[in-house]
Amino acid sequence: MNIVKKLVLVAACAVLSPLVSAGPAEAVGGPYYGAIAYSESTAKYGYAWTGAGQAAADARARLYCQQTGATDCVVRVSAYGGWIALATTIPSNPWGWGRAGTRQGAVNFALSGCRTYGGGDACALAIAVDLT
Image (cartoon, rainbow, N blue to C red; front, side, top):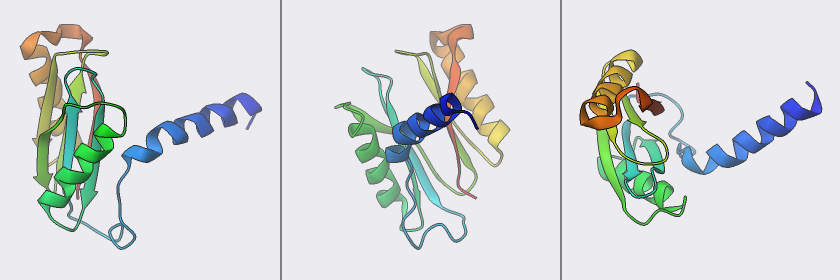
């Protein structure tokens, strides 16, 4: 691996690592409770999954969103098991969320919601979270 690829990988890990949530005993097997929190003013988000219940997942998702510097983070989608997804136009609104039994289903719902509320072709998947 050349030095440029290594630097890109290190930078990506540094950016994404605060957003990932799995407690020490939680990465063993699902299904999990999960949530995605989103800031409409900044288009930043945080997500979490846990075996400790929906309230814990919601709180962690809000916290991770706030750690990006956003102050208006709200849980937009949560679930137990399956997949959850967020689609948005960067850097602002509109956005859409999805929840389904498959990744593709959740992504399709999220993209559809974003497009329906004015995002059109600018909508892109921000995150899809596996809770299975």
